Amino acid sequence: MANPPSPSIGAASPPLPGGESELEAHLPSKRMEVNLGPSHPAMHGTVRMKVELEGETIVRADPEIGFLHRGFQKSCENVTWTQCLPYTDRLNYVSALMNNFGFLNAVEKLIGLEIPERAQFIRTIGCELHRIADHLTCVGAIGLELGGMSAFLYCIEARELIVDRVTELTGARLTTTFGRVGGLNRDLPPQWLESVLKTLEKIKWLVGEVDTLLTNNRIFVDRMKGTGVITAQDALDFGFTGPCLRACGINYDVRKAHPYWVYDRLAFDVPLGRNGDNFDRYLMRIEEIKQSDHLVRQAIEMIKPGPVIIDDWRITLPPKPEVYGTIEGVMAHFKLIMEGIQVPAGEVYDSTEAANGELGWYLVSDGSGRPYKVHVRAPGFAILSGIRRMVEGQLIGDLIPTFDTINMIGGEVEQ
Amino acid sequence: MSAFALDKLTAKFPRAILERYRDRTGGDWGVIDSESIRDVASELKDDPELDFKLFLSIDAVDRLMLAGPHPRFEIVYFFYSLKRGEHIRLKCRVSEECAEVPSITSVYLGANWFERFVWDFYGIRFRGHPDLRRILMYEEFKGHPLRKDYPLRQRQPLVPERPIQDIFRGPGTNRP
Image (cartoon, rainbow over all chains, first blue to last red; front, side):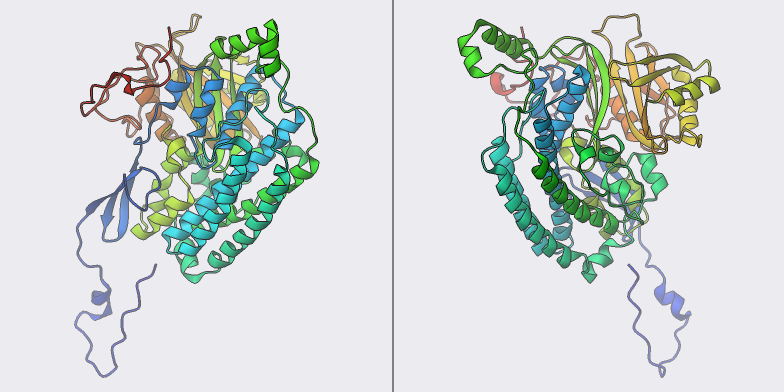
């Protein structure tokens, strides 16, 4: 932001000693260290930002994380593969389905499983719905923190509609724990696809409202354009992925580069930015909401009836009549519950495109029923480590929209 | 997958690539001599034909409970090449006694926090790291929680906890 022009002095008044430059000179100030957070209205989750200020300019910013650390990896190493699933919900709690399915996808790759087509479609629909929800939350929060409360309300109204659909599908609002190794634990509820289509119509209208409220809003654009800039070079170096990388003009989307499930059969565009600033990152999200809407509609057209989980009792639970009626069924059920899925020994790195970028999993199995190592490459972790580069030398006011547009999620960053 | 990149690395650094193998899912791995990891990383990043510019991740594995002659720790590195459209998977093996590798922060800026994470949770030092502090755990914490010999249910509270036995449920509660 430029300094407001100094009030012009009438021609009649005598020239000041020292001239204009003395008036415009910076006031003497001393360096000040300010703590933003851990509990601060402008910090999402519990992050502490140690900011060194020279006047209003940030000299050094040091994010301190770990307040939400829950021992994700250690917990996963001590439970069965299926029992890891609830922990993955809590990584990115705004879009839990993407974590569930990303984790399952990696485990299935390690076992060498191909899941049924219907399950692939349902996973795609679930992921894209949650991508819309994640982006809506991000855009809403940006609006809210830059003073546009109504944009936030529209976004949250739209997100609530998705949360309702997800509740119908999984039984939980946020902590979905949906899907099992080999497919899904249950099929779609009746009439669900029709209500998703109705929801999409409503969301389209609401997103249109948000778009018109924010994208051409002078105050909003002034705060967003040219702030929090990162070059493509630095973004790659820090390991940015997802909308934050694409806002710099780099075309990398796991769904296009290494298609999984049915993404290679669906048509969609990957929006690209140019400047790598806050405004481009915001535009990426608005455009991705539209693309996800498009993807869900295509998937709903193409989905066919069929099984949603593979029929292999070493991996999936047998149907209940078999458990109660046959000895093989009860044995398979008992073995799976008590010992877990016997994933053959080996290692795998697999990634899916989550709302904020590449969600990578490095899994090591020692052949027992429990994971030996579960490494999660949370997209937010790499992005948050780069925030320093984006805010140093800028005004403290620009830290807020920058922190919003990188959409850091405490759960996945702090594991 | 990334066989080409590993071929090229083997030609350039014949002594640094200790081993190559393909895992069950088709991923190619290169085992790097830990002292050369910095050179290998900068070659991967700067060679225009390889172009592994996108930094992805670093983590470690504690092999304490696994069979095999290998030293205790494995540090795994993941990079991505936009030009070639492929991942590369590298690992370094270090023993418990000299758990130290050169830092690659000067090559990839993003390695900074990931290396701090590995130091915090596995106690592997990164030589030449600009700021090797704990990242998620607190400074007063003793030990490295993701080592396999760190007890699952050990607690190190900074403020005394109330003496309620059953309050801490969680994984491992019903283990024999």
